[in-house]
Length: 340
Image (cartoon, rainbow, N blue to C red; front, side):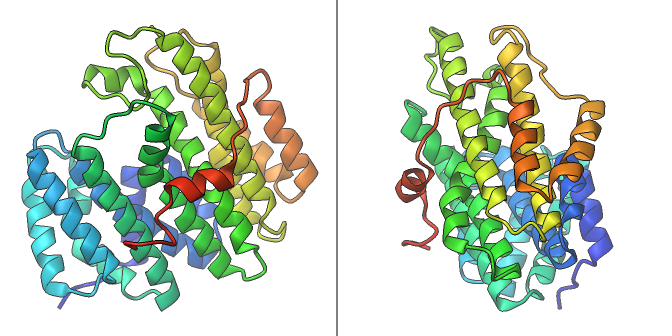
């Protein structure tokens, strides 16, 4: 019989594998802290397998597809879970850092906790983690990033679907939230956060022969492409602001969780906007900046006007390209259509 991980151990895993979400998730209402922490760990289990530098690519693809199907079917097959757990331990044993490997070792206990959630919550996690895992397997199969449509699809599978998962959980938590409006903005919200990471890490990714933007291998016109995607990214973060403003002001925990995440992303974009795209390898906001953003976010989050003014103040000077979030979601999302 599987043993369930307790809440404090779950949160310890969260602190060990994500500094950012360990900071922001505790701002949520109590029940959502549990659900979203668990959802993040499930996603991180898949991500640990995908990113393992030593495991064979074919084995990682096979595992991710099997894990996707296991999640899609509701996490219920205990024998399949034990098999997937053993395979994951074997795959990442030599490549994962200690804290990530500890999470993989606790995989059955994390999923046992998932099974204790209300059925509607469990179904949301099942759908989201299944789509994400399948998307990771497709990425490993060699998807080439040639244009903005490829960027949109890649970002959907690793982040846009997480935006949908969050929107679904928030709407389930508070039925006064306009679920359709939130879902329409959710993919753009996720893409804004993912594009921020892509832009921030692009030179490190280049060192490992990875690129998630449509830049020629010889680097030609890379500065122009970076500038273009900085503006696209800021446009997505503008949609993330609209996402927040759709959430009732009384849900200040949910709003603060979202606002601090996009405030940190926006501050990072501002640094990237002022950096040399060819040489500045480490672009990262300071802990002092994070603390200031937290204090200011907490001050404004209960008021839509102040929230809007705060966001536009910290993003001043960064160009933005507005896209249609509804069209984006219709084009890339798997949430409401087959095979999920």
